[in-house]
Image (cartoon, rainbow, N blue to C red; front, side):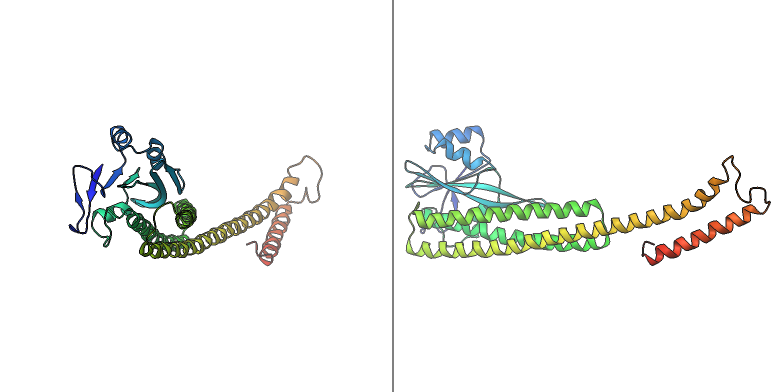
Length: 307
């Protein structure tokens, strides 16, 4: 748990020991002791804390007495995988508290002082800048996924290994989660304006409207990307199915051709009278017959493009 302060007088984010009005409390993967401290010492509603740590929680706004909860879905990169997790922004008249189950770049961008123009005392502006950060990393990670997709598609052209197909399915699943998160976030941003759950100043309203436009543009980009991935997967499935049909035709043709001599010669293994059974040159006639049938079969299957 970090207690942070950034004011117009000291225009740099600093960690402090005691909480006062206008401070930001940042909580990442809290222990049970920290959860109890939030609930008992800072009087944060327990349901707000648990909702913020629930990885399945959807974007929403909630109010309990003088506390307001804003849950936003944000992207997280863990090694080579991309996840969508919720972050809870809890606000009262004096302070802002961010609660998240995992460390993430959306919050870390504040901690590295890469965000200009925000102060911990301006709770509405802080919330909007957090939304701006979320949109920034959605955009950045979508670009990374597009680059990964291009590489996987290139490998798929030269290989049909299961690893490439699994990689493509992982991308498809990830971009679907991105799409769902952007839709939920967009609905939340609209509610902030319509329901006036937090005081929106004129300058902040313009920022929020820009964030809504950014979200819609991102959603459009992700939708196109998702459709392209689905189309590619459908095309790849068709190619695999077509290759399987070609292989089955080839094997069927080969089986028929190889079985023709066996069918003919098996007749002469029966204990019944057959034509040329007593002829010492019968084997040569049978051999020529088998060869003729094989040549005819090869010609037939080549014409049918089975071979």
